[in-house]
Image (cartoon, rainbow, N blue to C red; front, side, top):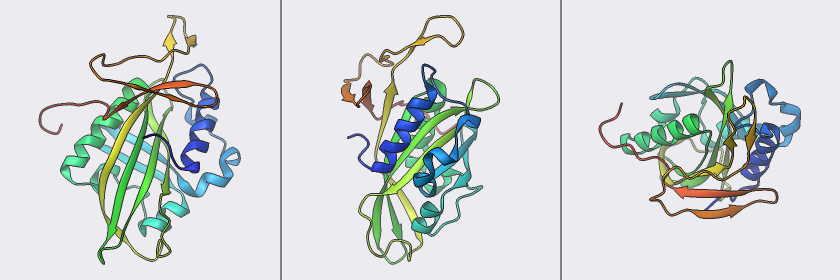
Amino acid sequence: MSMQEAVSQSLYSYWDALRGNRPAPKRFEIEPSRIANNLPDTFILERVNYTNARFRLAGTRITDALGLELRGKNLFELFDIHDRRTLQNQIELVASRCAVGLFHMSAEGADGKSTTFEVLILPLTHTSETIERFLGSVSSREKPEWLGSVVLTRYKLIHHEIIWPGFTHSGREGDFEYQAPILHARREARIVRSARRQFRVFDGGLSISGDER
């Protein structure tokens, strides 16, 4: 399963073109006017540390759909301990290896109404070459008529995968060649093709054993 929503596909294409032959674009290179149609569905996430990834910005369609103000909230704390650990491991992989995170989550209100969302998380460099910011999107998959009138308070991961935009580094600063890297040879990978590039997709991403850090 890969990106199914038009918002995810459009934002990924913008990010991928912007990074050029680098692992990730810089935060200040993001031009809101270039993604104007998708801005209400996008967010900026700041990774403070392994256990804290807080929303710096969240589009109006996201906050309206969830019935929740996300700015300043820790993404991980929206989920139970099991899903929290999974997300922390996935975001660690996105940050450390310039991977792309794709998630499907369910969200349920107190009245039992629920729906699912596709969430895309894309790495950005900020003041250094380390990944501490993320550009992302949240898009409703079913778009029920009641969406926006119910506060959704319970969140659960139902699918997650890592997408590898291929590149290798030649050893010279800023010099990358596109090639799909293999992080874990023991995992079976499937090929995902877009109009311009080919990716290897690993279901589940990084697995870290032990207690939560």
